[in-house]
Length: 221
Ligand SMILES: Nc1ncnc2c1ncn2[C@@H]1O[C@H](COP(=O)(O)OP(=O)(O)O)[C@@H](O)[C@H]1O
Ligand SMILES: [Mg+2]
Image: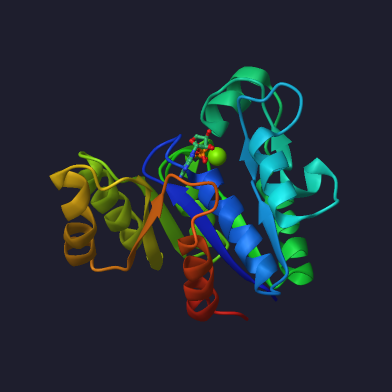
């Protein structure tokens, strides 16, 4: 079975899709077959927006529903969208879809929605899914002032659930102020984990470095 990990974030809009797409392209360049999986996408009335970007980055010609099984119109947490829109999310369908992808690709890059404690269905959160599916996590965070707290909260919650934190990506890094320049060291020390910086470019070379690191540090089974 292929390797898989969850790209989670400290918030929505922090760059999970951007980083996941860069990693998918990097895996392709490394000759590693990789597929994305976005269990639920919300805020898309017609077609999955993250799903399309992820699919294109992976160079896959498959149905959207193979990558994003459940789609909702309103920009809401999945559990809330499900409640309001009356379309049911089936966790078994999600599990089966991931399994199928893991059986077909060497690496599956799973993108959550928002952060680890966002409810997917009822009280089931992305942290619960990561436990159920045995997924280590890559944490994407902003690089500016305020990120120490958000990032350490996410790392602690992940570990409290027994999840392995693969690394933190501080995204949109510009290095323009003291907070940004010191955040990587502080998060590395206090979070006791690897920290990578992704700048504001189309395709920062560091994404290849991160893909290589993940490939070495992900357990296959
Ligand atoms: N490092 C980056 N450089 C340039 N644009 C970025 C970068 N990271 C994110 N963006 C842009 O910021 C927006 C939000 O990022 P996105 O990946 O969609 O966040 P999330 O998936 O966490 O909600 C998108 O328009 C994305 O293209
Ligand atoms: Mg996204």
